[in-house]
Amino acid sequence: MRHMQSVPWQLKIAAKIVLARLPLPYHLWAKIGLFKQGGMDRPDYALRIFRQHFDRACFARKTQNFVALEFGPGDSLCSALIARTFGASRTFLVDIEACASTNPAIYRRMESQLRQLGLYPPNLDHCRSLHDVAETCSAEYLTEGLASLREIPSASVDLVWSNAVLPYVRREEFLPVLQELRRVQRPNGVGSHCIPIKDIIGGKLNDLRFSERIWESSLMANSRFYTNRLRYLELLGLFRQAGFEPEVVREIHWKTLPTPRRKMATEFALLSEEDLQVSEFDVLLH
Image (tube, rainbow, N blue to C red):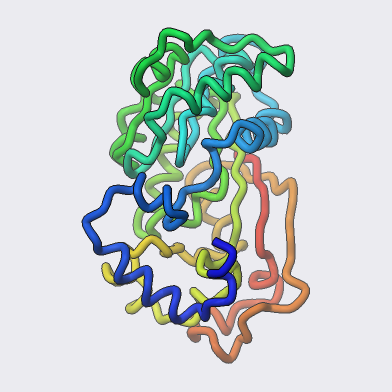
């Protein structure tokens, strides 16, 4: 929401700590613009994000019946419909909770958009539920995070992708998640990931102000503004530790650090300029 941009980061954190503990469903929060998980319920955006990952990924079965996995589909299963249109025989969509819209009209709008572009998506006229949409697109929607990844067969996926999702995986689960993504990805498959390295309470580095003890506490980590605070070089090291060969294809840098080093917790204040200045990057994992 536009008026929230001028709210101090301290107040945003305090408000989200309180609001996140109200017993309200995710879809209500998303409707009023709080805690919304991306924009995958908008056809233009969903198609752009899918194409961004699909077009730059080279994998053996790209022109055949490939299997796809989106980690963190967020507000919709539109990517399953798009993937099916581009030749996927099966799509896994893995999230940590059920956030996807159950409104079939969203998916029919996505279908219409694809047809207007001269493509041939599955016909959704008969779909009356999210289950119908998923079944028509040969998709499985799994909402138990790491546990769901463990249900997917080894070496079964050709294309894995995520968009601004990996920074929000709990630090303690990050390497296990990567190891599962490596396990399910075929040897000749590829992963494509867009990774912002900034906070989600203003797009700066205010999350680096806190000690690990405070930031990783359940109070902070369960308040829907958590980031794992893994930095650029550490992320590349973890990709390699999980068995991937990372290929960075895009980097964006801060011209000036938005949060001064003197305000950061010691572990971050001591990092190199090279490490701190990367604000976002895209990587292919082979």
